[in-house]
Amino acid sequence: MMHPTLKVLSRIVAITLALVGAELMAVVEPQSLMADPAIKSALAAIARNEPETINEQVRLTEIPAPPFKETVRGLELKLRFEQLGLKDVRVDKEGNVVGVRPGALPRPNVVVAAHLDTVFPEETDVRVKRKGALLIGPGIGDNGRGLAVMLSLIRALDEGGVKTTGTLTFVANVGEEGLGDLRGVKTLFGETLKGQIDSFIAIEPGPANRITNGGVGSYRYRVTFKGPGGHSYGAFGMANPIHALGRAIAKIGELKVPQNPKTTFNVGRVNGGTSVNSIAFEAWFEVDLRSETMAALEALRAQFTAAVESGVKEENIRWNNRAAVSADLELVGFRPAGQTADDSAIARIARASVIAMGGIPSFDSGSTDSNWPMQLGIPALTLRGGGQNRGAHSLDETFDTTDAHLGPQTILLTIVALAR
Image (cartoon, rainbow, N blue to C red; front, side, top):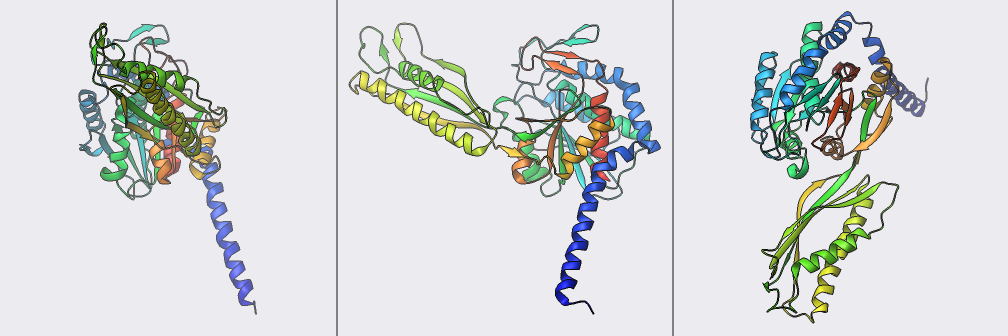
């Protein structure tokens, strides 16, 4: 008769082996999916339809979607979701467009998302030029490609007749860029689909072999310097908010940051004053602080705060505290740093999918919509839409369509494996 302790140990071993077996199944599943006729048909559909995907990428890019003004592009995605047969298509209170491709069961629920917004102001000329395989235009990759790939996936799954056990939920979300502060995914996880998301895949531009499993965290501040202001000649000797701002920026420029984890800072916008012959009563700048870990990010934030305080103090001392300048630090954006482990099930599936499509997996870190679920402990990755994207966030952004179909093919294998 087996000793009770041995029975317990035997049970633990059996459970452990079962769990390990499940992990191993997850790793090999993308390769085994390649033998499924429905998957073969879906992958072929992606390649066959790539010219139309490129055309759709151009059409979507040419619909302006500045931060906080994504509505028109969002309504186009809502229409396309409906035309492609998704169920329960809706726009949530934040402006996210949600559509469901039901599986045999509601769970696992795999969310596939691409952000609607760009960094460009409303008046930007977003027309796209074509030069052979090269597309040129602001936002053509980021994130015209991501949106077009998401539609390509839905179309291919249906053309291939692919069935999943779990559900695939597609989302065209707002608020990824700039001061959008991830408001789209924050609402998605906090309200719209709260407690209903088992894994999350964001689609961004880039080569098909890139897997972003590290979330670069950031703090974004607007720092406003204030004083009484006055005439440049008659009130000379008064502490000047713009001078205090300059002192602070100079100190920020001298901050020391580690190379590993990569930690960065940038003053991106400066404004203030009323005329060349006036001592300003107000001036401000916006700063972006980033790091791959929260510990390094917090250390940088402490240095930044000290630099602002020192700039104000030195300006006031320079003029003997006469009409003192003050500074207000307003937090306008926060993205938590996060990580999805290289050996997690979702990362292993993505790696296997890249390999199945003939690629060499490359893991990296970035600041994307995946940051938010990462810090919530929900399996999340950002995968790439294929092709080659250069000059993101510039007016001369380009997208090379060569072999771009490999992106959606790799993503299709990944999301189907996650939903099976």
